[in-house]
Image (cartoon, rainbow, N blue to C red; front, side, top):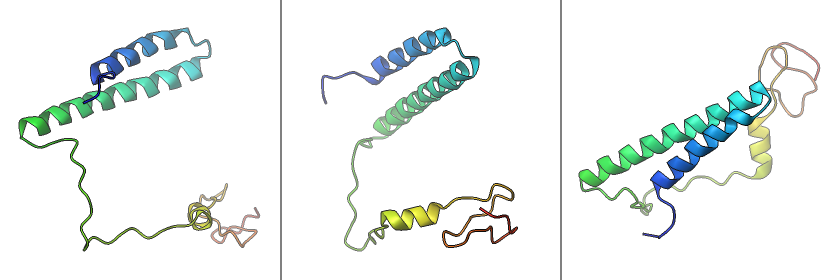
Length: 111
């Protein structure tokens, strides 16, 4: 293991950042930042507990499982495919918009 910061160090850092966030003037920004930090603290706690559970069961929590030859590799998706898959959504009905149409196929609203 490295001599770098520990999970406890990270959690103490998050607690300090949480306290500092009280000084954010904008209420919405302050609350958003505090929610982000509190979520990170919760995830760190969950990770620490899960790590300990696995260690107690004799399982290496950091063991990386390599795919076997029979495992199917995920298909490569190009950037263009990703953009067309994610697509935009209609501002009126929320349906997925087709890239080649200038209107919503669901409700007919113009883009």
